[in-house]
Length: 106
Image 1 (tube, rainbow, N blue to C red):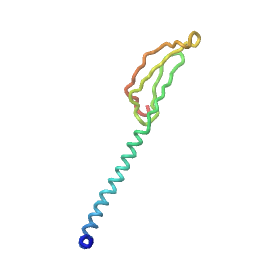
Image 2 (cartoon, helix red, strand yellow):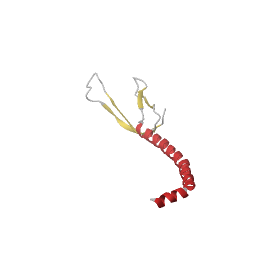
Image 3 (tube, one colour):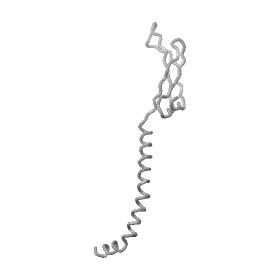
């Protein structure tokens, strides 16, 4: 143990300089890592919010809106029209349509 103590005492200025350099370089890297990790986690946890709005009750027109800040990918739109006067168990099926993406805040 005494050899290690003597060596450390004789090289204390060089060791102090190296620890300062490591602190100066290491601290910003840790802060940047935390910052990037936060945004990656936020991107995973936030889901897109897609809304389908019918334009008119007499015509089958609609619009798709994304109210979130994340792009919605592979949105599948499907409808079924019902005649409530005759048989509500048998809908008129309209083929589903896949939309590649819906931009954020659109």
